[in-house]
Length: 365
Image (cartoon, rainbow, N blue to C red; front, side):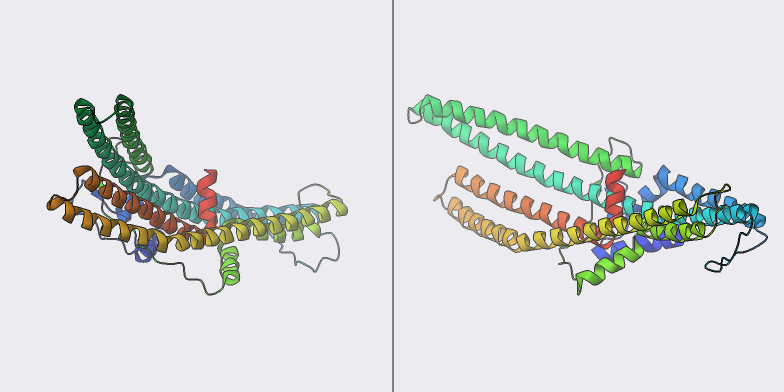
């Protein structure tokens, strides 16, 4: 059971090109975070136990079956006991196989959730850096306003505005600190670290466009792998057996009722397929939309960095003020923060596109 879980983690690491194991305890790679979460999550342990439980029930049901009916070859009643035993086995077998699918889905959802929480911390860090720079800018503006007011070149109303802007900048900075703490707390809870732990997150995200030759083919692959679609499809097979056996549930069920149950199962299957296909396409289009904004965000950062380079050169020779320099620095931090959040959002959407059921499971839980 653990082998394919490890393979999943390794595949994820190849996908993102993450770094190796952290050398010190005060650092945390994405690889380590995922492994910690897989070992810590009680839901996974419960899901593992469920596999063993349903397997035991399935094996017990197998022992009670002395006669194997032939689907589609029904020519008369097999007898209530035979039909009920066959139903018990089929239902137990489906529950056992479904429990394995559920476990895989929980792993997928947990991996996606940990990735998002890991990246959320990094985004919160970049937002805090921005608010720190904005606070520095507001302080310089306030100092200049005070000097101007003392010299009589700045109106008292402008000083009041500068003081209010600085106070707001301080509040925004404190809020960003709290947001970073919340992000760390969410990550720590998911991987079993102490709430006060603040490890340095060592893995960055590399932006790589989503490569899809055929969206329809990708959707078909997602439908083939999706656990919810698989279970709905298996339920149709179970209802087909029931449609041919009047005592399948242990008591008499009218033919029309059995046919309606089959129809309902087929409708459920179609609905689940539709929802999963929609989730897959939505993740794809959202990822592509982010990609369209990436080039503009990258260009904005380059322009801000060039402006900062020029402003720094002017400041060094006395042709620019400290306020002008800090303003240029703010523009760079803002552009970098925008790009940083965009890249991490794109990485999440790529994972969600590959396994849309993981996003659905994470949202529902």
